[in-house]
Image 1 (tube, rainbow, N blue to C red):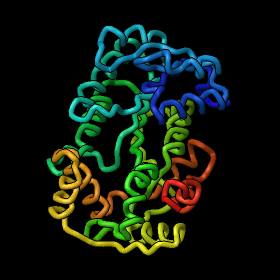
Image 2 (tube, helix red, strand yellow):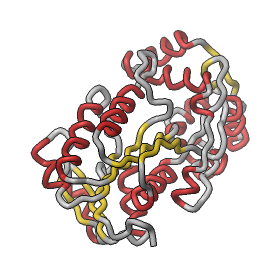
Image 3 (cartoon, helix red, strand yellow):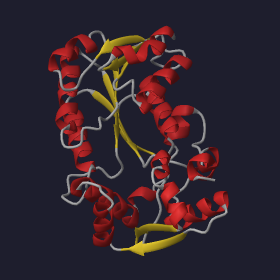
Image 4 (tube, one colour):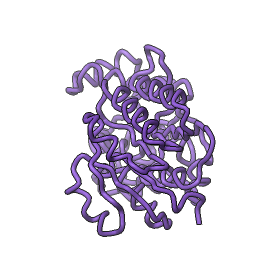
Length: 293
């Protein structure tokens, strides 16, 4: 039995992809008091049927937070997708958690979170980390690396065009599956103590050249890597219809792959789940249909 199997555990964003898997993992691992927080409880009736308590929790509704956090001992904050507002949202729930007497918070952050002007989307994660570290509550910050699922978004286009555009000097990204990250977060909620910052990574860094080779191997279609500069990538993303700010965030992420921030490999997934992380090759093979193969 895990250390905190009988503690009252709350997962935010439980109707989302990561949050739902985390709740299911907690139940599967024998947690006895699991609360699934969501803006829309009607979406979680299946989790309620499995034994989770469902509570209304809305980061933008301060009035919902005290009732949602009542009696909670350990909290998993799944970072929100409200880019531009999430640092404020997440500080609000940290403050509410302190008022409610929560003893430990697990937070899903991003690799190399920092306040630098060129850090893209990770600055909001950094300021959430600062708020958490300043709260006096025990914390486990899980810096989730790029989800492997994100590579499927443009995989079909890359394969059909035969061209994968990436920054010059790419040193690889340690893609982690969303399921591995969610199960790691559940494990941390059940086991972690003290104050730690940990990178959650896949098995090995995958470069653009290696990713293109895997696409080709699985589909039988040639894929060439086109190495470009950050301004060229920014221009291409905007031309493809992405908002300027979001495109800039993606460029910043790829710049970090060039500097090596995303090539980190840790044993965090295995320590908290008992299993080695899914390799990127195995992930792609399992999702071969999404590649148009």
